[in-house]
Image (tube, rainbow, N blue to C red):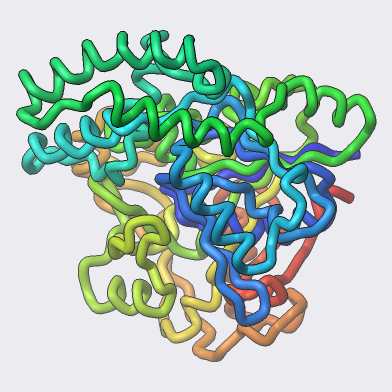
Length: 430
């Protein structure tokens, strides 16, 4: 038996979907524990590309139970559309393989409108939100005024909570944000329709997972976004609204920390991030554009071009520490195939002093300049390679140097987007 958490170790978009898809073969249950449809996992199976925003990547495997935990905020419309698209592709023939926590919070139309209106007012201080209503939904959750899935399933409770919410939200929309209000009827009728569809998926998923742990079955916990986007441990305020770190797997599912066996962090062989915020190794030159095009670095949820930069060992060492990583999977090594020289950030220079930790103060972090170590590239395609020993010597040297700098074993290397374009060095389930 093994229970494994997979988390992003940078600013998200590290390729978690592919890694989860590979590890799912060894799991009985795959659980999404935080975030919403602001996340996107792109999977390539054979020649077929599948993009998932809410449903765990394990849904592409038959006989696996997929669970969306209480830490997730759910947009019912997006969830239902995702199911429809999967079924159209011949996937998810059995509805019983997918379960929703009765305690998760529901994203409402006013959350999305508030999200967009606030961002529009922010001027040059935009956070870079996707506008999906994620943040406002989490605000209502923490403010103890959110609508949970179990509330949505009871028309009387839902009606009462919706009326109470609209009193406040319409005031905010009209009086402060200058946007139009909602009527009770337009939301109530639509969401009651969603409730009828969702009902068959709802369960006490915390109890379900407790029983799976007791029975000795394997559980794979799937995070969204990345460590540096964590609401507590990320580059605040340029973060998401949930706990993306490994601890979120427990609070977002109701599974005890004592039940977690392995924590695998996913990291690109370089770094990307979407939206605003400090990014010391960002490349604003031809190398940055070369990375973007070679890695197809455009958001799977928004389509926005991602900011690209050299590997930051300070960021990864931080992720190892705050998550307690037991292994790191390095993705997109093949994107660096055509670089003659590859750089690794080993420190930050701030006002003449070199520091080796991420500053908590945003202005200090934004003013940091990277200190680089340079290594020779390998200048040859590697996507057809399946063992570590077959990699070019310079590629092996690069991976080993990353391992030394972050202080954590590298357990997987991805050399292409397809499931089979992967070098596995250690399986956390074995």
